[in-house]
Length: 257
Image 1 (cartoon, helix red, strand yellow):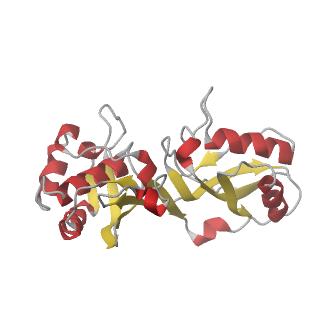
Image 2 (tube, helix red, strand yellow; image 1 turned 120 degrees about the vertical axis):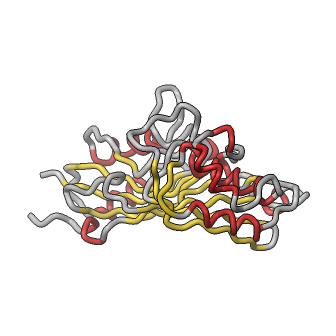
């Protein structure tokens, strides 16, 4: 009998070439699958909640796979902990419904982009691997006002990489806010799904708005133009972290035999 197992993992993306397995590169999926094969003693293929880019971090990335592993999930978690490298941790492991899918079952996910807004480099905070250093003073009130215009369902062609093709470029942003704590600015973006580089381009656009390039209400015009060249820069990957992925509660309980 096979069962479906849910894994929540955290990783420091600095030394990974993204989540998805790629021949010749160190990736999160590649490392996880190699370790899991040794633990469960059969080939497996992980399904991920999303593909983070090279250098992007995660606190709450979710994966699932079907296995004949006969023991409690906590035993799997402990066995993996002794074999995984220091930049990955399994935060939670448990059995779920057979039809649970880490990506398709998700209802929303939250990304946080961190900016260290000070003339002094973030080395003084030992956070240089996890924040984007932006030395010029940013106006958080302008950024907060601009962020509100991202909320809702919009065509985000202006906020994705050139050449990105999907059945629809419409995505729904449920929450978008900007806060400051001392020298650190945090941009939180929750949505039901994202296009390639969407969050990083949204962050770059908000940063440039905070520096005075646009008025907050001009975000509406940028979205309506559906032209990548009219939006801000793609913020560096190392400032971005996947915080969590949300699922319906009923999807997280095991199927009954």
